[in-house]
Image (cartoon, rainbow, N blue to C red; front, side, top):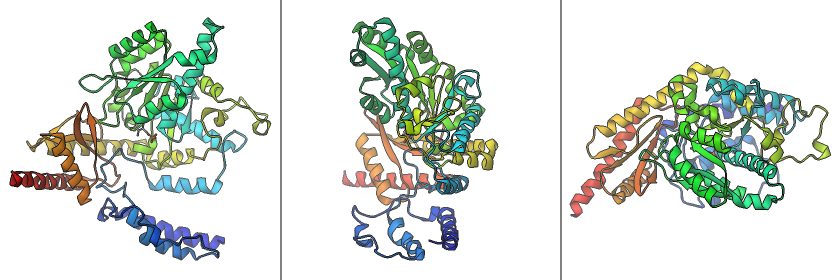
Length: 480
Ligand SMILES: *Cc1c(COP(=O)(O)O)cnc(C)c1O
């Protein structure tokens, strides 16, 4: 492709993107295709000779769009949001052009340095204690991980190294294997599946603890679990506190768990994957009360802060443990300036890393804190609008306090009834929801996901839900 063709191709793609996004509301949010739909639409082999780029443009609607679930449609309410914005898309273009692999400082100094600065900017935006920041007095600092799942695992591996070191100081005769066999980590039963998975990947025991009536992990439950394990000769070393659970957006009692961690020398990791973006608004910062006691903190601007996937900052008060957990030092990666600035290859599992800080830089500068705060507030307000609609209909109930942009609700009645309702809603495909279940109570989740969502969209979604509920309830009374 010559440079002029690139200009034409990218201009046409830009037009396509704008046309796609600005009219996304008109598309059916869920595709109707069956598995294998694409095979007859695409040749069996790669072309021997180059094609024209126009052919690819023509194939987007023919081959790709029929199989796309439109995550940025205002009719998409499944999971949690995933970020997307014009500034972040343009930043990814530049990242694609520079295409460096920023594993050490010297491998592309701008890649590392912008990341250090962006994580300080972002940390200040949510008022993270300065012990977590590179500009603070301590050793703290942040790194962009690909996902929250990686952040949880990386923190666990750091905690493991730290605990092994502490135990060896007391029992120099114990082997690493003996110690690892005794290590135990904790999270709540409502923690994300990636938390339990971090335990499996890290090769240590993981306990998922019961929550209280509001589905929050409490200090007392945690303290009891530790006591029981210590009596068995086990070594508690790591806990994940979730701020904003995936099932229902509840908040573990960080303020109760933190002091226990500090006195018991247990690494406290905070997973605020979704909710963390809301902490840029002062009125939601009470939800992170007690953060000063944590060892590591993570959230996903790629969920709710308009940054395209992947961008999952992790802040650490003492990154040395993580750096030591993964440290290997082949000659070809050494450089003369080691130690002055982070070599991020030591802070993560892969060696290679993209220039992801550009997305943050573009988004933070082109929106400004003010507009990002506005964005969060609009989504929370829309969630409350939907909550009001549900509450106004006596056939429905709200199953969890609405704090941010997620509403958990159900038809009063059995789980089967609600499963049937969800099947009808997703079957019609006009809007998309996913369910969850807490303590055998099945419910529907409506997350505000799109940056295009307005009140009229929430009204549309509520009408659609009511229509499917009426079909279901009418059908039931007919069959009786
Ligand atoms: C979404 C989510 C995760 C996983 O996020 P990834 O970045 O996809 O790994 C972890 N924890 C919570 C609470 C989440 O909501």
